[in-house]
Image (tube, rainbow, N blue to C red):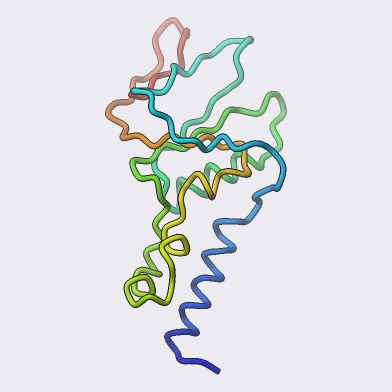
Length: 146
């Protein structure tokens, strides 16, 4: 029932699909629009500000971390979760051969982060991180990402 290459491709597509769509809800607005700003705003601390989590890098680890954090039940306020990556696409490298041979499409092998994160509360910033500044001594900011 099909060639070994087609069977492997279908199996990898199914695995990729379950990884990238696990836990994605149909509710909620899209916060996955790329940012055109030069830097992320400061990570504020204190009783009046919601916590914020920034995940640097949108590979398997970064993407899955951001998605899992968005699914957790938080004791207090839910943090704003931001994923930062220099690329606008998540690259699923095991399917590169299928892309080159025409057995898979670009959107199957390298979907846009905004499409993957669209139905989640995770915000996507399409930027290169140049610097990370740690928290100041006074505790006014938890840090800054440039």
